[in-house]
Length: 314
Length: 244
Image 1 (cartoon, rainbow over the protein chains, first blue to last red):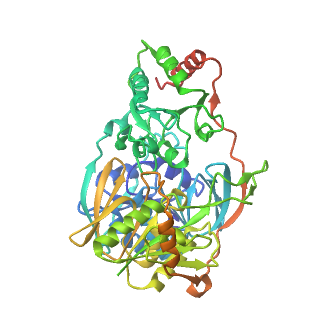
Image 2: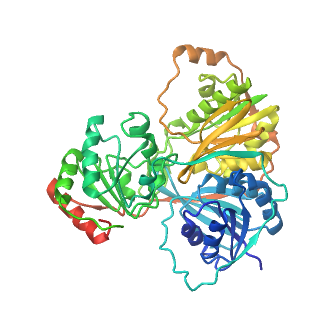
């Protein structure tokens, strides 16, 4: 039987979460990849059954391959298609779902196999409840904030076969005119990030946060209002759905309520610490450690507690 | 040519009461515009101006059609009698039929929120048009639509051929409220209602909402004591976690 579960990828991020989501359908998972050869090889090493790969033309966004992916879906008829929220991957899955007449559900944090149904759980009402949805197959699922499992050691696994797919002229009229690295590579790759929200009272107080960041050997980031409405920190350092998506080992959120659009940007953080005066702030629902207190008391105390400490190179 | 901006209204997620068994009481929960809709409208206006196209609004269900009319849209259509689907493909099918009914549409601009992350892309697929989502800004240069978005650690500029669908994410919080003048003008602008059943969208087997439950208890370990004590406790815990 051909693989009936597809994971659709245009970038390497969250590959393990996609595989974990596909795991209830034990066995044969096809990876559908649009990107460079390095991405295809990376995916082939992850334990999938096969990699169907379109080599991305540098002048085209990956989204342009949507008709080709949809045609293949029509031929192979997968029962379940999975993607992350990455824009191009979603575009491919959306085109395939439209061609298959599949249902489409976004924000899934858990998937279960019930034979002719895929059961999905996802947060609703800003994380206050969890919805359970029963979806007929075929269904396309855009993952939400699933916890990323520790990458499996694939050192001894045999890489999956990579099948290069022809586009055969099935490309959308999209032209990638520019693709530039964002200015804040430091925030994206930093092992520690200190981020501040509207709990900060003035622009001058950013210096307090910088002091803590220096004590932690961390990069500075912020929530959307601090960058957009207030302009206290550069927009390139805003973390959230439409801003930076980061995966630090430590994310220290200071005076940030934890709106879903913000938490989307730190779903891959390993340890999240929240400092907030409001004990009911949503961020305490997803943080690992919480301090209910005034940042103007807690941050100086943290600086003092960290003073003179040395840090490992993470 | 028309540029269509699609907007939606839904219940304020913070408003409904959640009972102890995880069920939800939506009684009196106020309706609010979609989080990305103001940004989508800004993008749609920019492109409609650049292309000298007519800007029209399209909404479904219990939305307040005047929201867009008071913000510069010349004409709005509301599709009535459509439930709040949990299946993004069902929503996209209704929108695709409504867009086809409008006719002469060159571009559809729609908000791209996480919870409805499947709507814009499936809409593009159903229309058979290029779709680009995650867009935060767009403009018209030399008669072509240029859209900007961030993917991973890169900022992309993509040029689209029309017709197309653009999904917009907000990079700011919209605080603008139309004044009385705009509201009065909106009342004079045309707004028609289409019965959903008249769109002829085939009904597929539905995605069923089985219920809601409370999330597992918070994973946050709350640290207590004086500022000095919580700071020391946190540093100690982070050392143990191996993240310092």
